[in-house]
Structures are given as structure tokens and as C-alpha cells.
Amino acid sequence: MDLQSLTLLVEILDAGNLSEAARRLKMSRANVSYHLGTFERSVGQQLVRRTTRRIEPTEIGLQLYEHGRKIRNELDAARESVATLGQSLQGRVRLSVPSGYGQMVMLPWLIDFKRAYPGIVMDVAFENRVVDLLRDEVDIAVRVMSDPPDHLVARDMGPVRYVACASADYAKAHGMPRQLEDLDQLPVITSGVVGRQLRLSAYLHGERHEVPLSPTLMSENFGFLREAILAGLGVGLVPDYVVQDEVQAGRVQTALNDWKLSIFGTQMYMLYMPNRHHTRAASTFIDFMLERARTVI
Image (cartoon, rainbow, N blue to C red; front, side, top):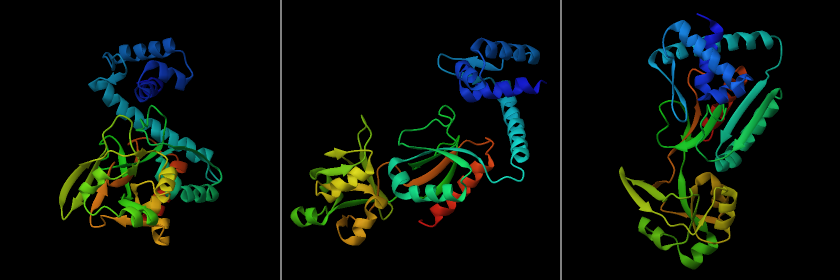
């Protein structure tokens, strides 16, 4: 079996369509289609099905794809070992992190990593949207969720603890919520998703409660949310790391402290594709970040 054709099949399925595969391989779409057809005729079976949006593997195509990925990963690892022999650690890491957690918690970790490994190129996106690791060519994504997807490797980076909080001045003037239902009558400050009804999940003594929210101020910029809370514009529902310094200094007070609160999930996860060859740079980055995360759990 032709190794080059097997590698081509892997690239096509990873890309999801012939046009994207052609772009990555720096070939014409017609050329990619021709070589795929030649490979299918040599095998004697159809390897992919073309849908309106993507290319999906047939059963035999999926088996060949799995073998092809393993072979390609081993070849990539061998090439990297030869290329980096006797050199300082080099490579590229493409990373997607949440805007709040990335800027308020991970930022010093990222700086320290770059100082420790100056030869590694870091490409960091601060964003909250759901990422398709293959389509967006992202090596590693960090996201908050309750149940990570089965098709990805999910490494636990610790719990996400939401707090109900307000500035000391707001608390003095208006009081703090004493029960979950009070949140429906208060100006709530939190992050949100356009077109989606926000719901607060709350847990007490093993029982789960859910409260619909109608925030008066929403943003994906957690620095802005923190300033709005400090300005006394309402009651914030934010992860604890957003206001931890202000709480310790007495500028912000918390409420509903017996409850475990959550909006988007209860755990932070580092996500990456299984069976993808990780460069030494990516593997080193994963270990470095997980070790840092353990220090704040």
C-alpha cells in the first residue's frame, strides 16, 4: 500500500473537505480528488462519502485513517527527534483559552512558559466560542464545561467556582441576596451568550436547583464585569477568580456562600485531539500548564 496515498487520506479526513485539504497540502483541489480516486481504485473500495458540507469516512476508510494517523505521528516524532537533536526546545503551540480565565489566571503562566522556552512560538487566542480543533488548526483549547466531549482528550484543570457578589457600597445601600429567588429581582451582572436564555445552576446538600436569569449587564470581557461590580451597578455572578483580590481587600462582598453556583460548567478542562502527534513543544506546554493549574486547585 502506498504510504503517500495513506497520508493523503489522513489529511483529507482531518481537513473535512477537499478544498481545505488542498489548501493545507498546497495542491489543487482537482489534484487531491484525482489522487483520492486513484487510491480508492487501488484498494477496491470507497473510502469516503461526500455530504453537502463534509467528507466522512466509510468503515474501511476509517480503519485506514486510524492506521495512517499512527504512521504519520510516528514519522513526525522521528523527524522532530532528528531535527532537534542537540538543540534547545523549539516548535509552535496554537492555543485557545477563555477570555476571563486566560487573562486573569493563565496569563502569568503563559509568560513564565515563554521565558522558560524562548524557542517555542506561541499563538494564543483569547476567546469563548466553541472551537473545532481540526477546522481551526488549534493544538490545545482550554474551556469551562460540565461534561467534556467524548471525542477529545480532556485534562482536568480544576473546579470553576461562581460567586454572587457586589461592591461594599452596593451591599450597604441595597443589601445582598439572601436566597436564590432574590436574583430575579436584582440587577444581575454576568457573562452571557447571544440568543441564549441564561440559567443559574445551584447545588446545596446534594440537591440541584435552577434559576432563570435576566441580567441587566452582560459581557464576555470579565475585566469590564469586575469594574461594573466595583462601580455598584448590581450583583455579579462571576467566577471567583474575577473578584478574589477585591473580596480579600473588602471592596467586594459575597452572598449565597453555602451554595455551589454554576452557569456554564463546573470544571475547567484542557482539550486536545486523541491520536494526534504532539510535538515536544506541545507536550511540554501541556505538562507545564497542568502543573501550574494544580497549584491553584
